Amino acid sequence: MIGLQSRVGLGTAPLGSRVDGPLWWGPQDPADAVAAVRAALDAGVDWIDTAPFYGWGLAEELVGRAIAGRRDEVRILTKCGTVRRPDGRAADDASPVAVRAGLRESLRRLGTEHVDVLQVHDPDPTTPIEETWAAIAELVTKGLVRAGGLSNHPVELMERARGVAPVAVVQHQYSVLHRSPETDGVLDWCAANGSAFLAWSPLASGFLTGGFDLAALAPGDLRHRLPWATQDLTGQLGRLAAVAARHGVPAHRVALAWVTRRPGTYAIVGARTAAEAADLRPLPTLTPADVAAIA
Image 1 (cartoon, one colour):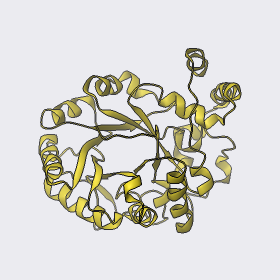
Image 2 (image 1 turned 60 degrees about the vertical axis):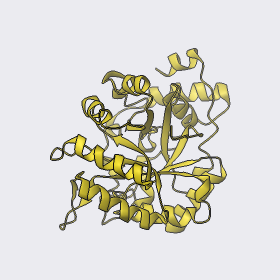
Image 3 (image 1 turned 180 degrees about the vertical axis):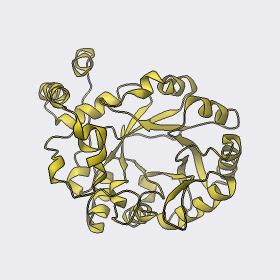
């Protein structure tokens, strides 16, 4: 077990926002990013999810700055297997050579001697998962990685990896607006195999937060292209707000409580300022009636 304590972890994809990078979330002030990480730790968040893909190393560098002197307070989860081609585009490469090289660079940017979890970011159709997973198991043996995880992999690949070594963490998109882990077997597989399930985009990239204004986002912000940008979310937002009023908390905490209501499930939440990071927890305990109302 990787021993995550807080049901919510800090996601850093928005912190790596850069207009010339793979993900553009609008302008991000580096000082605000560092302050957000530190505020999350101060609020009791004890794990951070990051990746080289987030700004091609920028997010990891900012996390490294923020945790300097506080490494013992936090578990660091990063990724491998998504690389930058010479033309700047992203490519999947989870070959053992790429996994080892990627980890070396991540450790340098993060300023740490080990990461707590190394996750394969996306399936690599050119490398058998058994080869990738054997490389990660070797890194665990060497002490550079505490545990391995899989992000966005189907159950069939998860099961094949488990045949080589334990899969401590599984990460998929999951929210009240995106529920495929309930129907594609991912949540059931995690429960059966003792793997922690981490939900990315549990607030639908901000669409489930109060006061979210799509029109106020910068031109080119990736959220303009998400499916919820053209959907009427009034009903779902109203149901979350009604439950939130009963518990006396903001609606986004109810959305996070819904995602983490099962044992062994956790939520990765992006926060871009200290104020946002300080408002990630605690989460309310939802009743069966609450869950039914949200559904």
